[in-house]
Length: 387
Length: 161
Ligand SMILES: [Zn+2]
Ligand SMILES: [Zn+2]
Image (cartoon, rainbow over all chains, first blue to last red; front, side):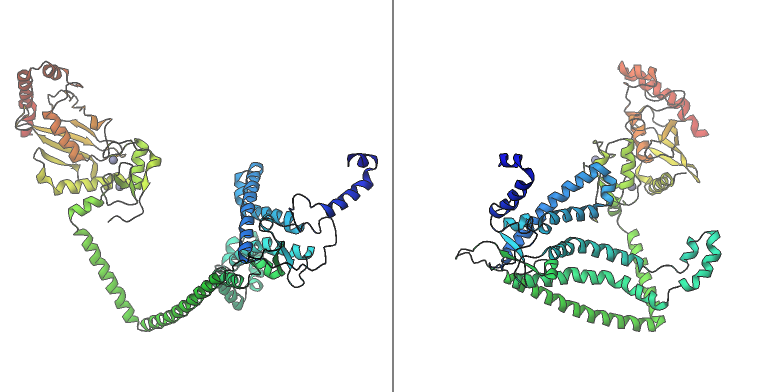
């Protein structure tokens, strides 16, 4: 191969590469059906009539992919930190992650090869409507939906929530300098948003998180259930772009893959129960609202309730004072002689207020009660209510 | 003005008033002026089995604003003959008032410690060399009579003040 290429470099090179793509698969792609479209501009148009991939293989491929994506993410992160410093790396972490995912899928799916996970499980993507290899635009759409849409979605919803945040009425005045004050006040009437707009904004602001949560928990569950039943699309992006998986090898007779229908049934049951609970909660809320309204209607009644509440609080306080001396001593910090606040334990097990013991240990790193050495870093705040 | 020290001194004040009956050798422990919780006085009573019997020893107690991180400064106002107390200035050599201080001590417990120092002197770290030398030589008779004499001279005198 070396002698002809040295004699006539241009011609032999193209011939060689074309030949190679036909005979031997490039090493990065692996055995079997592979690398259509890398060097040949026209993707193969023949129908691929191999068995469609079963759910376990699709899931395994996904897991494998996310494993390699994580490795790539970590390495990109390290590189970014080395180059731009850790502060900027932290600031742009999500963007860096998206970039590394984009790299991963650009180098695999977009180029028309299998991802590492797909290769590992011997599955490949096809356009489900025509059972042909997905075209480049379709693959680009897949990568776009898979990587960029989630990012755009989260950023967009954050931005939307920020923008629709109810603003204090006089905010423009606070921001305006003295020079601009006159012009601004003239401008203000047209800038004042209509009440309907304010209402819409408030509505979006209040309901957006709920809606997002709903999609995140229930929408995703439903999608997963459908996948467990029918086994075509594991991710939203594949469903949207209509790309599904087939095995790129012949299954041996005994190799019938079992599906995940049981899991699908479980998810459906879970969703049904959640829906039922939600309905019941709605009913309870409505009842509470009604009773609260009734209470508010009689103002005197409400006033009485508050008075009663206050009284009971006072009683509680009195009880505090009549606690036995022993009990008070147990709760007392020996440094400030008050009941402990933010109880903190030394390694030797003695309890103090956080501020008290920290101040003392800065002065002298030993326990005030038993004189054991105490490193400030060894002080242990206790979040459990002890008594 | 740190409020932490005032809070704590108020707590100690209330506690001292509450269990005044439980400390036989402490006749008095109180702020000199009601509105200044950083300057106290105390009167120790000489224990019955010692040369200090019948004596009343006045202490001057100054609380630093960094109390209880820093120990109080305590000295005898009454002249006392003791190996660990300076005869002229009344300065006390007691480890818990210096390097061994911990904020778990209170004025009350410190006064009790000083009271027990009277009956258990520590001649190895003397401020009064004459008294310490007598003790180190084992001349208990000489030591006791010296203590008795000074107690009679100064500590009982104060009674008439
Ligand atoms: Zn404390
Ligand atoms: Zn301890």
